Image (cartoon, rainbow over all chains, first blue to last red; front, side):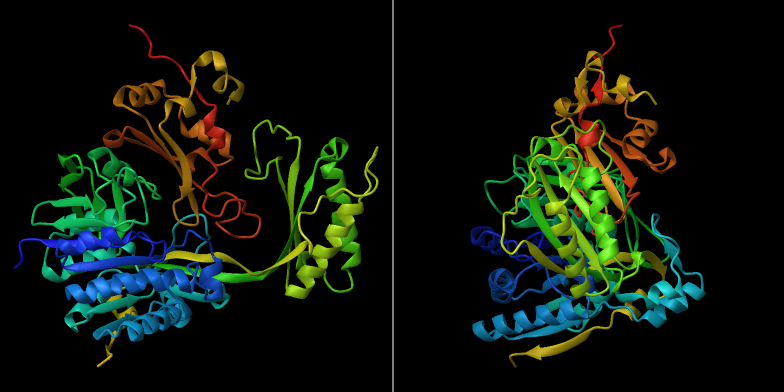
Length: 453
Length: 119
């Protein structure tokens, strides 16, 4: 069995654009695996709902072309998780289309494994009936009706499906929604390394060089996993990792810096020791995995309607003092004028005033700015109805009367013509729950194909 | 809770001025998490020992039940982490104002931390 595994993370999100020199430096270290994450729930529910990717095709073509060529020239597995931002079927298909384009252009040959991550609604409903689905707080317990109302549900796969892909001889693995750690920890699982260390290392690798100083999600990081410790080193010589920077990264985007959860169990960092090796590298030991009954995190979204918005500024001092009065009148006007087409509960109007509680709805002692930027948002059951409600709200606000008004020609400074914009579908997360499963791998079937053969 | 007292300039320095990193971010679409990383162990200890940062304070600042507030001290990074559920819309749902949760630390900025008590 090998003494160490060298795992290279290309970037925190494939498509953000990493330096070619870092990739080259990483290749010289002869990594056993190259990995990249391509998704996140951070950009909100839209991507899972719409099937679209946050990263544009042109961005991905560059990063994927360079990294795929690197992995093929080194002859090592290339693992990509959460393809297309949200990791559903359309996201996976979209990613594979770009992979195909790059592969043909550069004439690569490899065995491709694809791992879809959409979970059949019937499977989730069965689990609900058997009491195996739990809320993670905030959202209510999941009902079968809520499942039926989702556009799609994905599950975050752990290491098992990736191990199956390695066993099938995969050179390139493209997975739908996956735990970020699974991308980098799966080879260790296959090769029988300590999984407490492997998951901790993977957790640091998954954001690229985000745990370095200066930090960057769009740069390469190398992790070297040995039997009783691992080492980290950024592949850009102008960055370094220190015990403090690596410790601090364990706080990032998660509630508890001492513990984190994966489908395989809880990783306990209470006894972790991080020592500097030199100014740019650290050695980490003591991280442990406490295995638990396997569970999969589910994500699903529901369509809430369609959005149209307008953006406008205001500077008149009397107007700035009368915003609530004007808004109330606009709401009344719109309700009256859309009555033929919509009932009051069918649509919603939101007024965001930047300069007055725009970023935080409940701001302590709000101070009024000398200018206020406003966004009016209309959400309705169809795009046309949303645009109609918005158009009525915009014209009503523009000409809206308030007591003592002096600027009687118009209330709004529009920066654009046309003033109104179509925002498309509006989704919200309605599924963010944990599902206990006997065999997590069974939910994520692996298909292998010979490409360019 | 008397917030006027908490923000009283006479009480000491602002948390924002003591921290090297002060940030908010999503911890998944349902939770917000706040990190305060201090430049050294002395400042970190001073903030921790002041016992100003309590679930009751966070509850008063963010309109969330104090039972739902998690505050974790993290010695290895000279850092304090606060996590709360999103009590309004979840990330990106209609009515949400901050999809990534990246600008929600503002209420904590002016919290005053007194000097280390002399013995």
